[in-house]
Length: 313
Image (cartoon, rainbow, N blue to C red; front, side, top):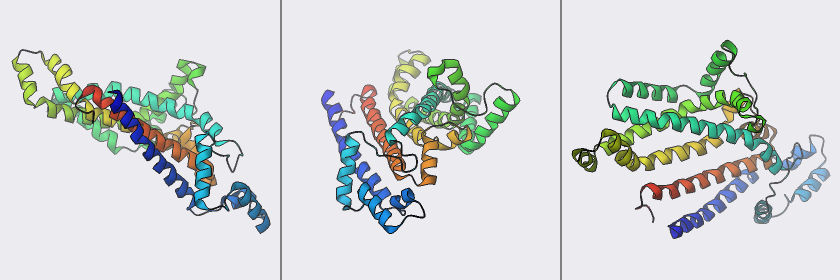
Protein backbone atom coordinates (compact mmCIF):
# COMPACT_ATOMS: atom_id res chain seq x y z
CA UNK A 1 0.00 0.00 0.00
CA UNK A 2 2.79 2.43 0.91
CA UNK A 3 4.60 1.63 -2.33
CA UNK A 4 1.44 2.35 -4.33
CA UNK A 5 0.94 5.68 -2.56
CA UNK A 6 4.59 6.65 -3.11
CA UNK A 7 4.42 5.79 -6.83
CA UNK A 8 1.24 7.81 -7.28
CA UNK A 9 2.72 10.79 -5.39
CA UNK A 10 5.93 10.75 -7.46
CA UNK A 11 3.91 10.51 -10.69
CA UNK A 12 2.33 13.87 -9.82
CA UNK A 13 5.65 15.78 -9.86
CA UNK A 14 6.16 15.79 -13.69
CA UNK A 15 2.54 16.83 -14.11
CA UNK A 16 3.05 19.79 -11.77
CA UNK A 17 6.22 20.76 -13.65
CA UNK A 18 4.34 20.74 -16.97
CA UNK A 19 1.53 22.79 -15.41
CA UNK A 20 4.07 25.36 -14.15
CA UNK A 21 5.70 25.58 -17.60
CA UNK A 22 2.33 26.01 -19.30
CA UNK A 23 1.24 28.77 -16.90
CA UNK A 24 4.57 30.58 -17.33
CA UNK A 25 4.37 30.49 -21.15
CA UNK A 26 0.67 31.40 -21.17
CA UNK A 27 1.32 34.73 -19.48
CA UNK A 28 4.68 35.51 -21.07
CA UNK A 29 3.44 34.94 -24.64
CA UNK A 30 0.07 36.67 -24.21
CA UNK A 31 -0.41 40.23 -25.58
CA UNK A 32 0.44 43.17 -23.31
CA UNK A 33 3.57 44.61 -21.73
CA UNK A 34 3.83 44.49 -17.91
CA UNK A 35 6.43 47.28 -18.00
CA UNK A 36 3.98 49.56 -19.82
CA UNK A 37 1.28 48.81 -17.22
CA UNK A 38 3.60 49.74 -14.36
CA UNK A 39 5.02 52.86 -16.03
CA UNK A 40 1.70 54.21 -17.31
CA UNK A 41 0.79 55.94 -20.57
CA UNK A 42 3.30 58.78 -20.20
CA UNK A 43 6.38 56.56 -19.77
CA UNK A 44 9.41 57.16 -21.98
CA UNK A 45 11.22 54.33 -23.81
CA UNK A 46 14.13 54.70 -21.38
CA UNK A 47 11.82 54.22 -18.39
CA UNK A 48 10.22 51.16 -20.01
CA UNK A 49 13.65 49.66 -20.69
CA UNK A 50 14.70 50.28 -17.08
CA UNK A 51 11.56 48.56 -15.72
CA UNK A 52 12.02 45.58 -18.07
CA UNK A 53 15.60 45.22 -16.83
CA UNK A 54 14.52 45.38 -13.18
CA UNK A 55 11.82 42.72 -13.80
CA UNK A 56 14.14 40.52 -15.82
CA UNK A 57 11.91 40.73 -18.91
CA UNK A 58 14.87 41.44 -21.19
CA UNK A 59 16.49 38.09 -20.37
CA UNK A 60 16.03 34.92 -22.48
CA UNK A 61 12.75 33.16 -21.92
CA UNK A 62 14.30 29.95 -20.56
CA UNK A 63 16.32 31.97 -18.02
CA UNK A 64 13.18 33.84 -16.93
CA UNK A 65 11.47 30.47 -16.43
CA UNK A 66 14.19 29.04 -14.19
CA UNK A 67 14.38 32.24 -12.13
CA UNK A 68 10.57 32.22 -11.77
CA UNK A 69 10.59 28.51 -10.89
CA UNK A 70 13.28 29.07 -8.22
CA UNK A 71 11.22 31.89 -6.70
CA UNK A 72 8.14 29.66 -6.83
CA UNK A 73 9.87 26.83 -4.94
CA UNK A 74 10.83 29.35 -2.23
CA UNK A 75 7.19 30.45 -1.96
CA UNK A 76 7.78 33.78 -3.70
CA UNK A 77 4.88 34.37 -6.13
CA UNK A 78 6.00 37.88 -7.04
CA UNK A 79 4.49 41.30 -6.38
CA UNK A 80 1.25 42.73 -7.75
CA UNK A 81 1.82 45.24 -10.55
CA UNK A 82 -1.10 47.34 -9.33
CA UNK A 83 -1.09 47.28 -5.52
CA UNK A 84 2.62 46.38 -5.11
CA UNK A 85 1.57 43.84 -2.47
CA UNK A 86 3.18 40.36 -2.37
CA UNK A 87 0.92 38.01 -4.36
CA UNK A 88 1.25 35.26 -1.74
CA UNK A 89 -0.17 37.66 0.85
CA UNK A 90 -3.06 38.63 -1.44
CA UNK A 91 -3.96 34.97 -2.03
CA UNK A 92 -3.66 34.15 1.68
CA UNK A 93 -6.09 36.99 2.46
CA UNK A 94 -8.63 35.77 -0.16
CA UNK A 95 -8.39 31.96 0.02
CA UNK A 96 -10.33 31.70 3.32
CA UNK A 97 -13.76 32.80 2.01
CA UNK A 98 -13.42 30.68 -1.13
CA UNK A 99 -12.42 27.53 0.74
CA UNK A 100 -15.14 28.10 3.36
CA UNK A 101 -17.87 28.39 0.72
CA UNK A 102 -16.49 25.42 -1.23
CA UNK A 103 -16.28 23.12 1.81
CA UNK A 104 -19.75 24.09 3.02
CA UNK A 105 -21.12 23.49 -0.48
CA UNK A 106 -19.54 20.04 -0.70
CA UNK A 107 -20.74 19.12 2.81
CA UNK A 108 -24.35 20.07 2.00
CA UNK A 109 -24.11 18.39 -1.41
CA UNK A 110 -22.85 15.08 0.00
CA UNK A 111 -25.41 15.05 2.82
CA UNK A 112 -28.24 15.63 0.33
CA UNK A 113 -27.10 14.00 -2.89
CA UNK A 114 -26.04 10.53 -1.75
CA UNK A 115 -29.28 9.79 0.19
CA UNK A 116 -31.25 11.17 -2.77
CA UNK A 117 -29.35 8.94 -5.20
CA UNK A 118 -29.82 5.89 -2.96
CA UNK A 119 -33.55 6.58 -2.59
CA UNK A 120 -33.95 7.07 -6.34
CA UNK A 121 -32.17 3.78 -7.11
CA UNK A 122 -34.02 1.90 -4.37
CA UNK A 123 -37.40 3.24 -5.54
CA UNK A 124 -36.55 3.01 -9.23
CA UNK A 125 -39.35 4.30 -11.52
CA UNK A 126 -41.43 5.26 -8.49
CA UNK A 127 -42.49 8.78 -7.42
CA UNK A 128 -39.27 9.43 -5.42
CA UNK A 129 -37.14 8.48 -8.42
CA UNK A 130 -39.06 10.87 -10.68
CA UNK A 131 -38.78 13.70 -8.12
CA UNK A 132 -35.00 13.25 -7.80
CA UNK A 133 -34.57 13.17 -11.57
CA UNK A 134 -36.72 16.29 -11.98
CA UNK A 135 -34.62 18.14 -9.38
CA UNK A 136 -31.44 16.99 -11.14
CA UNK A 137 -32.61 18.35 -14.48
CA UNK A 138 -33.53 21.68 -12.87
CA UNK A 139 -30.18 21.83 -11.06
CA UNK A 140 -28.32 21.49 -14.33
CA UNK A 141 -30.62 23.70 -16.38
CA UNK A 142 -30.85 26.87 -14.26
CA UNK A 143 -27.71 29.07 -14.37
CA UNK A 144 -25.97 29.72 -11.05
CA UNK A 145 -26.45 33.49 -11.15
CA UNK A 146 -30.21 33.05 -11.68
CA UNK A 147 -30.44 30.69 -8.68
CA UNK A 148 -28.38 33.15 -6.62
CA UNK A 149 -30.60 36.11 -7.42
CA UNK A 150 -33.76 34.07 -6.70
CA UNK A 151 -32.35 33.03 -3.30
CA UNK A 152 -31.47 36.66 -2.51
CA UNK A 153 -34.97 37.80 -3.52
CA UNK A 154 -36.75 35.14 -1.42
CA UNK A 155 -34.54 34.54 1.62
CA UNK A 156 -32.93 37.97 2.00
CA UNK A 157 -35.31 40.62 0.65
CA UNK A 158 -38.67 38.90 1.31
CA UNK A 159 -38.04 36.78 4.42
CA UNK A 160 -35.00 38.65 5.82
CA UNK A 161 -33.33 35.45 7.02
CA UNK A 162 -29.91 36.16 5.50
CA UNK A 163 -27.92 39.28 4.53
CA UNK A 164 -28.00 40.24 0.86
CA UNK A 165 -24.21 40.43 0.44
CA UNK A 166 -20.93 40.19 2.32
CA UNK A 167 -18.97 37.52 4.15
CA UNK A 168 -18.08 36.90 7.81
CA UNK A 169 -15.19 34.48 8.53
CA UNK A 170 -15.81 31.49 10.78
CA UNK A 171 -13.32 32.95 13.29
CA UNK A 172 -16.01 35.55 14.13
CA UNK A 173 -18.39 32.78 15.24
CA UNK A 174 -20.28 29.89 13.65
CA UNK A 175 -23.67 31.58 13.41
CA UNK A 176 -22.40 34.87 11.83
CA UNK A 177 -20.42 32.72 9.37
CA UNK A 178 -23.44 30.57 8.48
CA UNK A 179 -25.65 33.65 8.02
CA UNK A 180 -23.38 34.93 5.24
CA UNK A 181 -22.17 31.60 3.79
CA UNK A 182 -25.45 29.64 3.58
CA UNK A 183 -26.99 31.35 0.55
CA UNK A 184 -23.80 31.23 -1.59
CA UNK A 185 -23.31 27.57 -0.62
CA UNK A 186 -26.94 26.68 -1.38
CA UNK A 187 -26.64 28.43 -4.75
CA UNK A 188 -23.69 26.25 -5.72
CA UNK A 189 -25.21 23.17 -4.09
CA UNK A 190 -28.02 22.93 -6.66
CA UNK A 191 -25.53 21.93 -9.36
CA UNK A 192 -23.46 19.49 -7.31
CA UNK A 193 -26.46 17.80 -5.69
CA UNK A 194 -27.91 17.21 -9.15
CA UNK A 195 -24.63 15.83 -10.48
CA UNK A 196 -23.80 13.59 -7.49
CA UNK A 197 -27.36 12.29 -7.04
CA UNK A 198 -27.57 11.25 -10.71
CA UNK A 199 -24.19 9.55 -10.53
CA UNK A 200 -25.10 7.74 -7.29
CA UNK A 201 -28.41 6.55 -8.76
CA UNK A 202 -26.90 5.40 -12.06
CA UNK A 203 -24.06 3.43 -10.45
CA UNK A 204 -26.30 1.86 -7.83
CA UNK A 205 -28.73 0.71 -10.52
CA UNK A 206 -25.85 -0.92 -12.41
CA UNK A 207 -24.56 -2.66 -9.28
CA UNK A 208 -28.04 -3.78 -8.15
CA UNK A 209 -28.34 -5.79 -11.37
CA UNK A 210 -25.17 -7.83 -10.67
CA UNK A 211 -25.25 -11.55 -9.84
CA UNK A 212 -23.63 -11.14 -6.41
CA UNK A 213 -26.47 -8.80 -5.36
CA UNK A 214 -29.02 -11.45 -6.32
CA UNK A 215 -26.93 -13.99 -4.39
CA UNK A 216 -26.90 -11.75 -1.31
CA UNK A 217 -30.68 -11.39 -1.51
CA UNK A 218 -31.11 -15.14 -2.02
CA UNK A 219 -29.12 -15.76 1.17
CA UNK A 220 -31.73 -13.79 3.09
CA UNK A 221 -29.90 -10.49 3.49
CA UNK A 222 -32.19 -7.56 4.28
CA UNK A 223 -32.68 -4.92 1.59
CA UNK A 224 -30.83 -2.32 3.70
CA UNK A 225 -27.87 -4.67 4.22
CA UNK A 226 -27.71 -5.48 0.51
CA UNK A 227 -27.99 -1.81 -0.41
CA UNK A 228 -25.43 -0.35 2.00
CA UNK A 229 -22.97 -3.22 2.54
CA UNK A 230 -22.77 -4.70 -0.94
CA UNK A 231 -24.16 -2.27 -3.52
CA UNK A 232 -23.06 1.15 -2.23
CA UNK A 233 -19.49 0.05 -1.51
CA UNK A 234 -19.05 -1.31 -5.03
CA UNK A 235 -20.59 1.80 -6.58
CA UNK A 236 -18.39 4.15 -4.54
CA UNK A 237 -15.46 4.62 -6.96
CA UNK A 238 -17.32 6.65 -9.64
CA UNK A 239 -19.15 8.60 -6.92
CA UNK A 240 -15.80 9.53 -5.33
CA UNK A 241 -14.59 10.70 -8.73
CA UNK A 242 -17.58 13.00 -9.14
CA UNK A 243 -17.24 14.41 -5.62
CA UNK A 244 -13.50 15.06 -5.97
CA UNK A 245 -13.76 16.54 -9.45
CA UNK A 246 -16.71 18.63 -8.31
CA UNK A 247 -14.69 20.08 -5.44
CA UNK A 248 -11.81 20.96 -7.78
CA UNK A 249 -14.22 22.63 -10.21
CA UNK A 250 -15.82 24.43 -7.29
CA UNK A 251 -12.53 26.04 -6.22
CA UNK A 252 -11.96 27.37 -9.69
CA UNK A 253 -15.54 28.21 -10.53
CA UNK A 254 -16.90 30.32 -7.70
CA UNK A 255 -16.36 33.54 -9.62
CA UNK A 256 -20.05 34.09 -10.42
CA UNK A 257 -21.23 33.29 -6.89
CA UNK A 258 -18.62 35.53 -5.28
CA UNK A 259 -19.66 38.34 -7.63
CA UNK A 260 -23.39 37.91 -6.91
CA UNK A 261 -22.89 37.86 -3.12
CA UNK A 262 -19.95 40.32 -3.05
CA UNK A 263 -17.60 37.83 -1.33
CA UNK A 264 -13.91 38.84 -1.25
CA UNK A 265 -12.54 35.48 -2.39
CA UNK A 266 -10.21 34.09 -5.02
CA UNK A 267 -12.85 34.47 -7.73
CA UNK A 268 -13.19 38.22 -7.18
CA UNK A 269 -9.39 38.54 -6.97
CA UNK A 270 -9.06 36.78 -10.34
CA UNK A 271 -11.64 39.00 -12.04
CA UNK A 272 -10.02 42.18 -10.67
CA UNK A 273 -6.55 40.97 -11.74
CA UNK A 274 -7.72 40.14 -15.29
CA UNK A 275 -9.41 43.53 -15.69
CA UNK A 276 -6.24 45.31 -14.48
CA UNK A 277 -3.86 42.98 -16.40
CA UNK A 278 -2.09 42.21 -13.15
CA UNK A 279 0.00 39.35 -14.58
CA UNK A 280 1.70 38.05 -11.40
CA UNK A 281 -1.68 37.70 -9.66
CA UNK A 282 -3.32 36.00 -12.68
CA UNK A 283 -0.36 33.65 -12.99
CA UNK A 284 -0.40 32.73 -9.29
CA UNK A 285 -4.16 32.09 -9.19
CA UNK A 286 -4.06 29.87 -12.30
CA UNK A 287 -1.09 27.99 -10.86
CA UNK A 288 -2.75 27.54 -7.46
CA UNK A 289 -6.01 26.29 -9.02
CA UNK A 290 -4.13 23.88 -11.31
CA UNK A 291 -2.10 22.45 -8.43
CA UNK A 292 -5.30 21.96 -6.43
CA UNK A 293 -6.77 19.99 -9.35
CA UNK A 294 -3.68 17.76 -9.42
CA UNK A 295 -3.66 17.22 -5.64
CA UNK A 296 -7.39 16.45 -5.47
CA UNK A 297 -7.05 13.95 -8.31
CA UNK A 298 -4.17 12.32 -6.41
CA UNK A 299 -6.34 12.04 -3.28
CA UNK A 300 -9.15 10.54 -5.39
CA UNK A 301 -6.76 7.97 -6.90
CA UNK A 302 -5.48 6.99 -3.45
CA UNK A 303 -9.00 6.71 -2.02
CA UNK A 304 -9.99 4.21 -4.75
CA UNK A 305 -7.87 1.51 -3.12
CA UNK A 306 -9.86 1.86 0.13
CA UNK A 307 -13.02 0.69 -1.64
CA UNK A 308 -11.50 -1.62 -4.24
CA UNK A 309 -8.18 -3.28 -3.22
CA UNK A 310 -7.65 -4.40 -6.84
CA UNK A 311 -6.80 -0.78 -7.73
CA UNK A 312 -3.17 -0.82 -6.62
CA UNK A 313 -1.30 -0.64 -9.86
